[in-house]
Figure 1 (tube, rainbow, N blue to C red):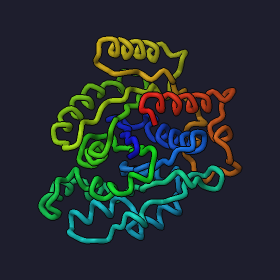
Figure 2: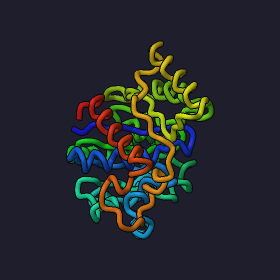
Figure 3: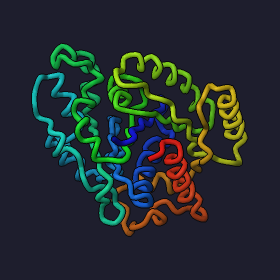
Length: 289
């Protein structure tokens, strides 16, 4: 069975999708891992970064996204098929990576958010079991599964947590971005009481969009390190993901002339590339893929 990791922060714009996609690509290319990205975020950023807008539009129209899965359980219909919905060759690197697969999201998720709580009435299952029931038999095909969660702790995020071994919290090292970390930890602990097959553990916090010359970033990192020493956090990843325009560019699927990780993530003496390279190595050390 794979190692399954949900990636969560209650605040948007903290580099969650960039880290998800970069980890997936580095693990697939440099470490020969079979990777599945599950995009649960209605913003669909990981989806578009891995397959582009044109392919996403086609799949969305054909009901080959996770929106169709959840809508089926609300409406008691049977349109979603897991086999045809998993995209089995993704990324703009090397013309697509055979070992990097995607279960895409949809902007239409927003339309059904308020109805998800009623799933138990129509489907007779717990609302947070929908994803688990759909993907359980597929997971054995992968070494690692990365779940890009929406910036909340609602039913969709709980579906990700329900199949996860760990969760990661990427954050900009400032007060506003780290403010919700205790709430995330508390909510996941409460959710663990509902799980029937083991708890989801916090793997750690990753500092993203980091600027070494910004005093508040360094002060926040020291505060997070203090929380690790106090046992409030299991770890703060040693790798810092720097603030770099190349990181945003890396999520643009239609970029031309991109064939290697260094071309895609190279910036300022390849510091961004080296940071993601170290992050992928550090992650494997902790989860023992």
